[in-house]
Image (cartoon, rainbow, N blue to C red; front, top):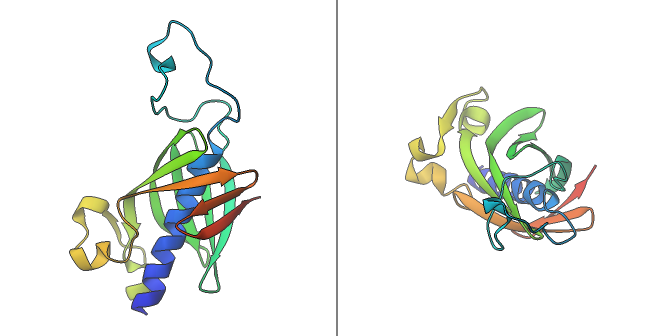
Length: 151
């Protein structure tokens, strides 16, 4: 059961990273006299958010669905929301951050949401980390070795 929870955490993280990557545009950033146009600056997704949308991957035989939009994401497994967070995009890299985790999903079968900073060390071990970086290539997002496909 502990391995399943870890895998589920990795899947969620991969999903988040995938959405973050999709939020990145394929072309160069527009240059101008705006502070947010500085090269190397991470920006929340814009109207050309390539990470925005629905991504589906498989972890240990279970389907994980990640939905991203406007810099936020959530992940669901077995029709239950299990993770929530934010994301940023830089080039083809998407950084997802876990902000809330449904710790009751596997242990008690009911929703029991906790902020990341409220998790015990044991609960944190089930996740790949507070933030994870993944890469988007075409319609695929690779997060921690799990491949998600944009729907």
